[in-house]
Length: 107
Image (cartoon, rainbow, N blue to C red; front, side):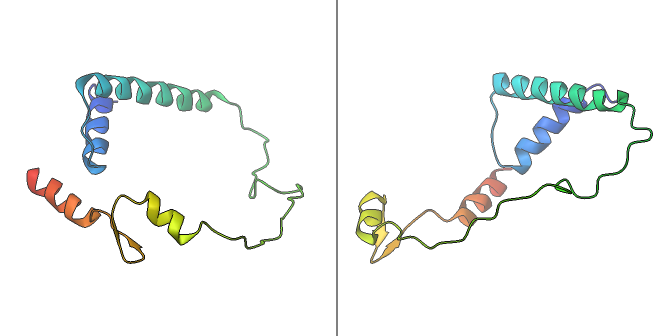
């Protein structure tokens, strides 16, 4: 594996997620990725010979299904009281599309 693999991947994922990491947080994430990789790598040591493939994880298990019962939601007036910005009966929010475009322009 490449020497800077984890560093490059953390930076790439942060860029794809449109988040900025401090140097400290980046180091923390790199270490976290290394630990995950080490953990998953240990699975290669498990002997899986003569182990029947499991197609469905719930084979032979009875799952209890609950009836879907509709319930009253939160009153519109209560929702509007807690909303930071409203227009008639709608809650206003920032446009995620505008935020993504502005971040793309900065890159």
